[in-house]
Length: 113
Length: 111
Image (cartoon, rainbow over all chains, first blue to last red; front, side):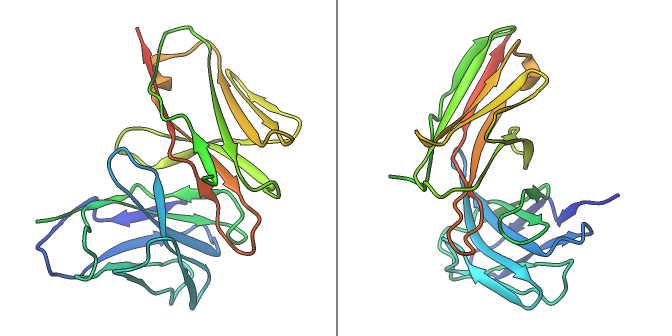
């Protein structure tokens, strides 16, 4: 079964702790993306990567970090510097770079207490 | 002007109705366009691409008007299962900038 997986589905953390969200894809896609969605709001781009070992900041990168050591994996770390981390986090991938249709994982709902 | 603008709705329509959503985009060099559907608390899923000549997929029709810089989505014979948020997505064709997502239009189909 090809697709994008994100884990866990729900995550609770205490304020001040870093947390890493997992995103894995077996679609052989080159590009991967992280978005944040707040209730009633649109998607906001955090980081994206068009190729292994390279990534670019999106519109709201402050307080987040990523790595792209493998083609299949693009983990997102929400650091304690992120002021309002509670949100729905969506990972996506696309085939031939940043212009192609994106396919999304099921998302991780992060709640910081 | 925002890159991609949509009427947030909600559009409340009875079953069987025809409903249309419009979306405007600011970058005239934009190359490709898509409609995604997002159910409540779920991930967005590709509904259809939008081609220059317009395209149809069952009850769904997408149109592109480059001169006025808008795309539209028409849903005929609405079903309860069509209730969702519909996202307009544009490829801005500006360097390596990824796709730009609109905030979505919410549709509720009522029995």
